[in-house]
Amino acid sequence: QVQLVESGGGLVQAGGSLRLSCAASVSISRKVMGWYRQAPGKQRELVADITSGGNTNYVDAVKGRFTISRDNANNTVSLQMNSLKPEDTAVYYCNVAWVVAGVKYNSWGQGTQVTVSS
Image 1 (cartoon, one colour):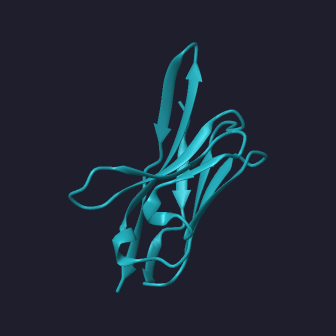
Image 2 (cartoon, one colour; image 1 turned 90 degrees about the vertical axis):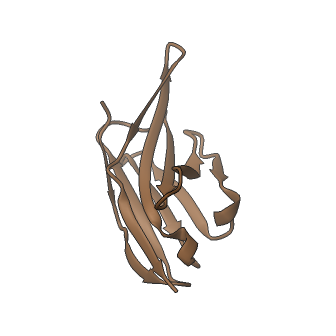
C-alpha cells in the first residue's frame, strides 16, 4: 500500500497562490501522479496529472493557472496554484496510479482543504 501525505492547503484570497505538495512512501518514478478535488455537494474531479515521462494533463478550468510537477528523486508531486478563484475551493487529494499485470491500482492521500475567499 502506497501512503501519500499532502500539505500546503489553506485559506487565500481570490487572485492569490498556494502550493500543494504530496510525499509518497514508495518510489513514484514509474507511476502516474495526480491531483483531484472535491467541492461540497460535487463529485471528485481530476485537476491535473503527470505521467512518469513528465506529460501533463489539466482540466480546462485550471489551464494556465495551475502547474503540476514531480520530483522522482524525492518521491513528491506538487501543484502550484496561481490566480486562485472562489470556485477552486475544495478538498484536494493526491493520487498515485500504477498497473501490475494489467490490473490498475491507485492510492489516495487524506486530502487538504483549499479555501479561496472572494
